[in-house]
Length: 454
Image (cartoon, rainbow, N blue to C red; front, top):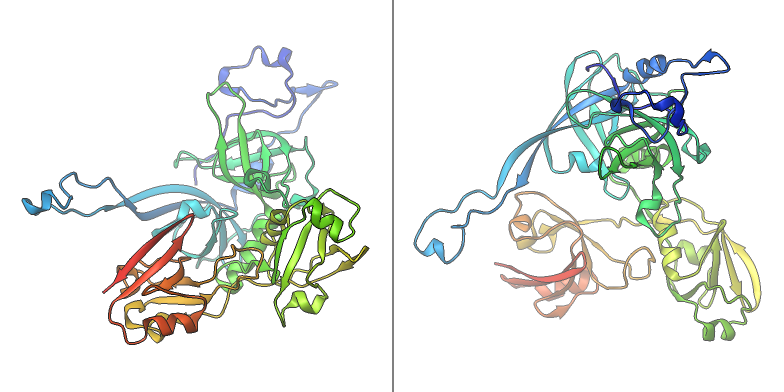
């Protein structure tokens, strides 16, 4: 890989010392050249150390392009001018080696989404093939594996120990030609229980874009994902996934292929003032009322009951049901939650173990030949990490398969088939048994559509 280019300095805004500097070195945080006559140490050793673990990734993918204006049913009556709606694209991003024995590399999920081919350039100049092991859009973390020897894994830091004001160095490859170095300070820490998506990341003014965030010991503390900037002279904000979370996601991907996020098998609703009075709760600061507990679940085993009011999880107070949903969504299967509940005027603690949000899947061809290539799982309406709609969730769809060609996509929720409600796999089978043509009502994201399979 090419040399690192320094475009920033550390520290506070020492304006008197910055006055004579070139505009190439403008930054929101800058260190003086010396303190008490003692020159500050150079960052060069840190950069050289980190550089050995950095990689440059060339990603080839298929992307959608603007449709031909003549690719329209009206014009196709007169012209045979249908053209492909996709094209090949190649772009570059950064990555970092985190396991030198297994050849595992962390990078951004958004950078490798839809990748058809990956080439990884190591620090010593070698080009090797890479393969995506798995990815997680929620944290923008992806894991790439390479078969190579002589790799150097980066030193692991502890993102939980970061403090606002700590100096950090951001190193990345935003231009696709050389690594860029930017220095700054941490301005906000990740709040894992926040309902605001941007608050789940470390924020700093070291906004280099895709790359890594390291401390002054050269240990990685974050995986950069994005930056927000208006002009070259304005303040910049960089976002980084905390390395502790990124490594947990990596472990989940390596073990399961995708993160096994947890869920608590209960239904809940917000605690209203009238319900608080009915449950003899003096505190009117909110909570989540348990309205249903799934029989045989870990929630039932932990002692949760209908009518319990969840007041807090760990140190995080529960104001509304969404607070509990979000907290659970940030945890993985097997995690133990320390929950404080109110029951009949008493406050007690329970420790439920979160279950896996991934259900055992069944192959589509086992259900119907029109669904060949898809896997299904029953949505448990009692898990608080999902919505309350009943249905059958699409686990995965093999590209090019029969189901794929019919428009079936991963995470689709089938709520009816041939105008009959679908609650589970059994009701789906009953609705489509003996039918050659299937009409599925599917919930996709925030919308819904009908798919005709014939």
